[in-house]
Length: 171
Image (cartoon, rainbow, N blue to C red):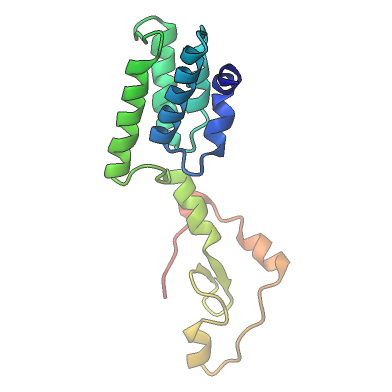
């Protein structure tokens, strides 16, 4: 069973909500101990460990792992047979990023997507805003009735705004 678990480290990583590398490393070590207790060994631990790390949800970490993998393939980075040095390095990377509050941080593209999803078309301002029509104070101040929700056609037409040219006013 330990051999099968080590062969599916990628599935285990996917099951971890926040890709906790410390938990992943401890799981891997416990499976190695189970294997040793049964007087068995593994020859593919490094490959499986890389497969697991590659499924982490943190984009910067995956990039770091890919760099390590490239170095390992080119034989410029040495990993012990039991991956102890690499496990420690991955765990230290994770702990450092958690301490700095950079683990699972959104990259620039992801931040743009989140910002766009949080916007609403305001028919009073004729702009994408953070408030809805119902929350708009401009419509209330002018004595105008609250506008109905923007039609799908108008909303679709306004979504074509170029990402680089997008400016948002918070009112």
